[in-house]
Image 1 (cartoon, rainbow, N blue to C red):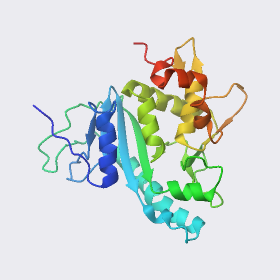
Image 2: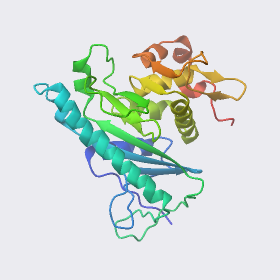
Image 3: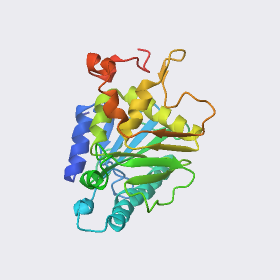
Image 4: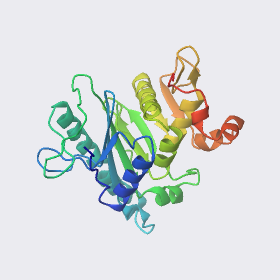
Length: 278
């Protein structure tokens, strides 16, 4: 029986659904799934092996008003687009782990066609945040792409002095993508296996380091591709020194990486050594 999928509701949800439909997620993703209370669970749900990817797409353009106080405006934007959605993502994770039913229609007649094993499931919470790019670029000449900076640490309190840096609790990590780097992630990690492997390597780094800081998800991706363990045939996120307890990935790492000869020659990262042994 053919499965009818939603195409998204808002413009940005439709963009996310379209990206998923044109990418490796096409066969594995379900836009706008519904919980047993007839409410939307998340914007995109994807299931691959024992991994569940829950995507939340949020857009708020109030940061685009250059006349407003940037610190106050940033805090309001982050509270609506990031903080509220982190709480929602945590609630959806609990819903899935409690083995409650998921449907593809509001009438609750079409169940999710994939069985989720709650005993072995690995849940990846992903927020796609729109509306900050132009304000990011205005705020700092060093921000080359308009991507949000991310800090994973034990201290997830707001950093008032650093707008456009999002602090995430490393003990309960959530992935923050944005309008600039989401297409890069989907293009360069062009199979679900590769996407899963990147997130696993990222979680390993979050666990390993007391603090992980990067200026855009694409910059962290560059670090990932530049580190490859020939023995285990896997990319990883790290630095050469073993006695360092923190990692800072510099601004512009991705732009530098795509100028390298190896990238220019092969065009797509798919041609570099891959995690997938097949």
